Image 1 (cartoon, helix red, strand yellow):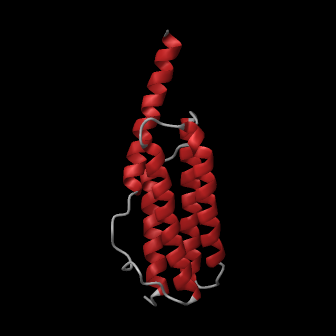
Image 2 (cartoon, one colour; image 1 turned 135 degrees about the vertical axis):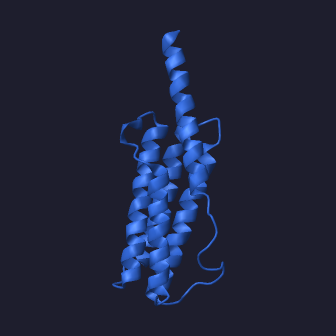
Length: 150
Protein backbone atom coordinates (compact mmCIF):
# COMPACT_ATOMS: atom_id res chain seq x y z
CA UNK A 1 0.00 0.00 0.00
CA UNK A 2 2.73 2.58 0.81
CA UNK A 3 4.39 1.97 -2.61
CA UNK A 4 1.11 2.80 -4.35
CA UNK A 5 0.80 5.99 -2.34
CA UNK A 6 4.35 7.04 -3.24
CA UNK A 7 3.66 6.40 -6.93
CA UNK A 8 0.49 8.47 -6.77
CA UNK A 9 2.36 11.32 -5.13
CA UNK A 10 5.12 11.16 -7.77
CA UNK A 11 2.55 11.17 -10.59
CA UNK A 12 0.74 14.12 -8.98
CA UNK A 13 3.99 16.09 -8.67
CA UNK A 14 4.89 15.33 -12.28
CA UNK A 15 1.45 16.44 -13.49
CA UNK A 16 1.60 19.67 -11.52
CA UNK A 17 5.12 20.43 -12.76
CA UNK A 18 4.20 19.69 -16.38
CA UNK A 19 1.08 21.81 -16.18
CA UNK A 20 3.08 24.72 -14.74
CA UNK A 21 5.77 24.40 -17.40
CA UNK A 22 3.26 24.02 -20.21
CA UNK A 23 1.35 27.14 -19.22
CA UNK A 24 4.65 29.04 -19.09
CA UNK A 25 5.41 27.91 -22.65
CA UNK A 26 2.23 29.29 -24.17
CA UNK A 27 2.98 32.12 -26.61
CA UNK A 28 2.59 35.51 -25.00
CA UNK A 29 2.27 37.60 -28.12
CA UNK A 30 4.79 40.18 -29.20
CA UNK A 31 7.34 39.59 -31.90
CA UNK A 32 6.76 39.96 -35.56
CA UNK A 33 3.18 40.04 -36.79
CA UNK A 34 2.01 36.70 -38.10
CA UNK A 35 2.40 36.26 -41.80
CA UNK A 36 5.55 38.40 -42.01
CA UNK A 37 8.63 36.41 -42.84
CA UNK A 38 11.83 38.06 -43.97
CA UNK A 39 13.44 36.49 -47.01
CA UNK A 40 17.11 36.85 -46.04
CA UNK A 41 19.01 34.09 -44.22
CA UNK A 42 18.77 35.59 -40.75
CA UNK A 43 15.09 36.45 -41.17
CA UNK A 44 14.23 32.92 -42.23
CA UNK A 45 16.29 31.52 -39.38
CA UNK A 46 14.52 33.65 -36.78
CA UNK A 47 11.10 32.83 -38.24
CA UNK A 48 11.88 29.10 -38.19
CA UNK A 49 13.27 29.29 -34.64
CA UNK A 50 10.12 31.09 -33.45
CA UNK A 51 7.94 28.51 -35.20
CA UNK A 52 9.98 25.73 -33.55
CA UNK A 53 9.51 27.35 -30.14
CA UNK A 54 5.76 27.51 -30.66
CA UNK A 55 5.62 23.93 -31.97
CA UNK A 56 7.58 22.62 -29.00
CA UNK A 57 5.31 24.56 -26.65
CA UNK A 58 2.27 23.05 -28.37
CA UNK A 59 3.67 19.54 -27.94
CA UNK A 60 4.39 20.10 -24.26
CA UNK A 61 1.05 21.74 -23.54
CA UNK A 62 -0.78 18.81 -25.13
CA UNK A 63 1.25 16.32 -23.11
CA UNK A 64 0.77 18.12 -19.81
CA UNK A 65 -2.98 17.66 -19.82
CA UNK A 66 -4.08 14.95 -17.41
CA UNK A 67 -4.04 12.05 -17.55
CA UNK A 68 -0.31 12.01 -18.16
CA UNK A 69 0.66 9.48 -20.83
CA UNK A 70 4.37 8.81 -20.46
CA UNK A 71 4.29 6.62 -23.58
CA UNK A 72 3.27 9.65 -25.65
CA UNK A 73 6.48 11.47 -24.76
CA UNK A 74 8.62 9.44 -27.17
CA UNK A 75 6.71 10.48 -30.32
CA UNK A 76 6.35 14.05 -29.04
CA UNK A 77 10.09 14.32 -28.46
CA UNK A 78 10.72 12.99 -31.98
CA UNK A 79 8.32 15.58 -33.45
CA UNK A 80 9.97 18.36 -31.41
CA UNK A 81 13.41 17.17 -32.57
CA UNK A 82 12.29 17.23 -36.20
CA UNK A 83 11.05 20.81 -35.90
CA UNK A 84 14.22 21.87 -34.08
CA UNK A 85 16.41 20.22 -36.75
CA UNK A 86 14.55 22.02 -39.53
CA UNK A 87 15.12 25.30 -37.72
CA UNK A 88 18.79 24.41 -37.26
CA UNK A 89 19.23 23.99 -40.99
CA UNK A 90 17.73 27.45 -41.56
CA UNK A 91 20.09 28.91 -38.95
CA UNK A 92 23.33 27.78 -40.56
CA UNK A 93 24.02 31.35 -41.68
CA UNK A 94 26.95 33.41 -40.34
CA UNK A 95 24.87 36.41 -39.19
CA UNK A 96 24.65 37.28 -35.46
CA UNK A 97 20.88 36.77 -35.56
CA UNK A 98 21.43 33.15 -36.59
CA UNK A 99 23.83 32.62 -33.69
CA UNK A 100 21.26 33.94 -31.19
CA UNK A 101 18.47 31.86 -32.71
CA UNK A 102 20.71 28.77 -32.56
CA UNK A 103 21.30 29.43 -28.86
CA UNK A 104 17.53 29.57 -28.37
CA UNK A 105 17.13 26.25 -30.19
CA UNK A 106 19.77 24.66 -27.95
CA UNK A 107 17.89 25.91 -24.88
CA UNK A 108 14.67 24.42 -26.27
CA UNK A 109 16.39 21.07 -26.79
CA UNK A 110 17.60 21.09 -23.20
CA UNK A 111 14.13 21.99 -21.96
CA UNK A 112 12.54 19.14 -23.91
CA UNK A 113 15.13 16.68 -22.59
CA UNK A 114 14.61 17.79 -18.99
CA UNK A 115 10.84 17.56 -19.25
CA UNK A 116 11.04 14.15 -20.89
CA UNK A 117 13.12 12.90 -17.96
CA UNK A 118 10.58 14.36 -15.55
CA UNK A 119 7.68 12.74 -17.41
CA UNK A 120 9.44 9.40 -17.22
CA UNK A 121 9.78 9.76 -13.45
CA UNK A 122 13.32 11.15 -13.08
CA UNK A 123 13.14 14.70 -11.67
CA UNK A 124 16.88 14.85 -10.84
CA UNK A 125 17.93 16.63 -14.04
CA UNK A 126 15.15 19.20 -14.02
CA UNK A 127 16.44 22.74 -13.81
CA UNK A 128 14.14 25.73 -13.81
CA UNK A 129 11.92 25.30 -16.89
CA UNK A 130 10.28 28.71 -16.58
CA UNK A 131 13.67 30.42 -16.44
CA UNK A 132 14.88 28.36 -19.41
CA UNK A 133 11.80 29.39 -21.42
CA UNK A 134 12.39 33.03 -20.49
CA UNK A 135 15.93 32.67 -21.83
CA UNK A 136 14.57 31.18 -25.08
CA UNK A 137 12.16 34.11 -25.42
CA UNK A 138 14.92 36.63 -24.71
CA UNK A 139 17.29 35.03 -27.22
CA UNK A 140 14.57 35.01 -29.88
CA UNK A 141 13.82 38.69 -29.17
CA UNK A 142 17.53 39.48 -29.57
CA UNK A 143 17.71 37.44 -32.80
CA UNK A 144 14.64 39.24 -34.16
CA UNK A 145 16.19 42.63 -33.39
CA UNK A 146 19.49 41.64 -35.01
CA UNK A 147 17.70 40.32 -38.11
CA UNK A 148 15.78 43.59 -38.38
CA UNK A 149 19.06 45.49 -38.30
CA UNK A 150 18.65 46.78 -34.76
